[in-house]
Structures are given as C-alpha cells and as structure tokens.
Length: 174
Picture 1 (cartoon, rainbow, N blue to C red):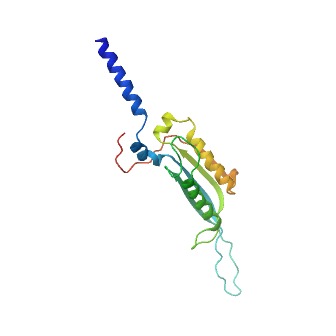
Picture 2 (cartoon, rainbow, N blue to C red):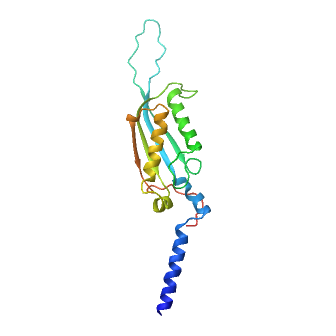
C-alpha cells in the first residue's frame, strides 16, 4: 500500500511540474494578458467661432479628451521580461504623436493633465516570474514616455499582476 501511495505522489509531482511549464499554444492563448494600458486625460483648446464684424468674442471652455494606448502581447513584451519591444514602442509613439499634433480632422494638440499606466502579467508569469514584473513593465513605459518628452510628474503607475485578465475569445486548453 505504501509503495502505491509513493508511486501516486511521484506521478502527481511529475505531472504538476509539467503543468507549471505552459506549452507554446497556451502561451499564445494567454499572451494578451501581457500588457500595459496607458490612459491619458487632458484638454484641447476650444476652437474660436468665426465672428461677425463688431461681435465680441465669448470666453470658450476647453474640450476634455481621453486617449488610450495598449502595449500588448508578444509584439510588445517577451514572456517574463519587462523590456519594451518595438511593437509596444510603435503603439506609444502613435499616442505621443496624437497628443502633440492631433488628427487630420482635429489638429489641435492636447494639454495633458494626467497619465495613468497599469502593468499586467499573464497568470503563468505571475506564478513563475519576478514578483513585481507588472510594475517593472509599467515603469518601462513611464521611462519610454518620459524619454519622448512627456512630463513624468503627470504619470501615475501601478502593477496589477495577473488581476483583471483579458477574456480570451478562443479556446484555451489550460
């Protein structure tokens, strides 16, 4: 009886070890959870209306705006690492360009008032990687945006770990 119990324990330990190392298919399935979300709040100066001769200009209120960027998955982050890859940098560059130059339809720049940065990991990274990996990713984004001229005093960041997972839309064998 004792030999049977030992054999079961050994088998369970062996299977458990294999289960902790996710397959490539599983990693591709959960990779959307390797992400950093950047939300920027600010305001655009109000467009002055065309005035008729002799008409006084009214004081205009700025228009509040919110912009968002997402550095996500294998294009932005390697498994277990906090180094921002080219795909993530491209997404952040789009955001910085949008804030500085606006769009074709609305070329007004945005006066930034706050930047909220939330780092995330997938559940395998949270179990097997560095304890503060999501924070390290958020800090990598802070550094990149600061290097691009954004005011670091307006940035608030946090690491959320594997909390708030992205719902996966395809079947994942986990």
